[in-house]
Length: 468
Image 1: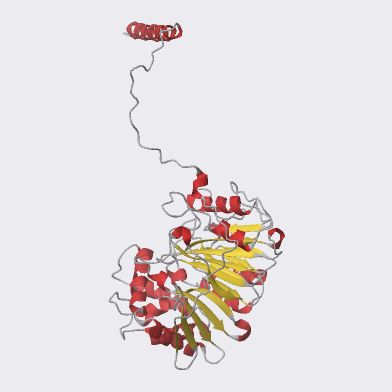
Image 2 (image 1 turned 135 degrees about the horizontal axis):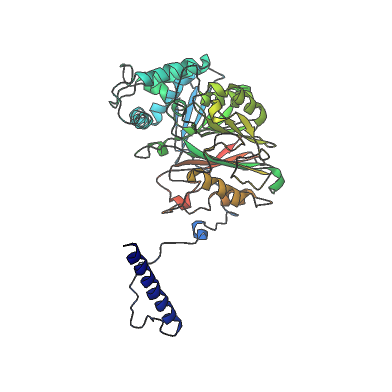
């Protein structure tokens, strides 16, 4: 049997060699008479086609006119209704935080009567996403709300309570998806990033060494769950917290008084970027507090990025989730990488000279980028194996780190050069874009793209939101 197998192998080799030699002697087969079958046109496109050439030299941000003004009876809240956002002023110089919260609710209902019902529906979409489906028992959620609210300074608690008591549409307590907004539901809306966590964001900033004005430019891109019907795209809000030396401007959503993106009169810009836990740490609220109100405290009490960053690092172990915090002033920029546990690394103020994790490249000391992962050497890596983070990081590096003498218009061109409509590639201006806010430290101007259903994604325009 063994000899038979050897003979069969030998015969096969002879046949193969013969066919090969025959081919070399001019008997090579041809494709005469062979019809190439029809194929679909290739869907492959050069990468360059996913960038759009733009020229914004003569394009100014749009200054929107006020359609209607609504005020609380005591004047502590004034809401100007614009075509694409609400412009809100809260006056803490003339009333307590509890009264301001109540005034805000009163003015919101006057400006948008359907707000409580819309808010309740949107809130339960987030609850289902956070808990993996419909809940029969809300005790775990109630514990989060009670614990996190109780951890805050009294002025913030009073503000929440004043707002909730005035905006609620039912006297029933607790959580129930019934089209009516309860007190507890209204309180939770100001702790969504800390208790439910649906954000995904990015940011890039360039310093005066590579700008035409010798002043910094900062861009903060917020991606958020807009809701199944894009509910939040109808409640973009610029809120002016009028409170003497603690005054600041927040860009977020109507009725929300925590911080997503904000700037104070000193030019301190703050924005939060979710990271989560690479080590799989489970959520706990025991002994924790809200990082979004840590940002609120920082924007009210500090003038520089470094001061604010150090405060956040000192308190990072008390926060519920690992996050990156964008911090810039005219001279300095940091990503405060706030680690909740040692398993995910150590809290650090990362700047453009901080050593990075293996596999990451950044080609400019005058530019700083950040996405939804830590990047500092030794911190948990949710970047190199996560395309959504790595691609955005590489795009920022490619687009911004090779630039010099950048004008404000050029900065905006780079931020909007991605082709987003029907795009199969990962973009930093993604499908869940809420806003892209640009802060210019030369003119102290704030302008933003505010995502809504009325604009085509590749033709969204910047809106003038005033100055800081």
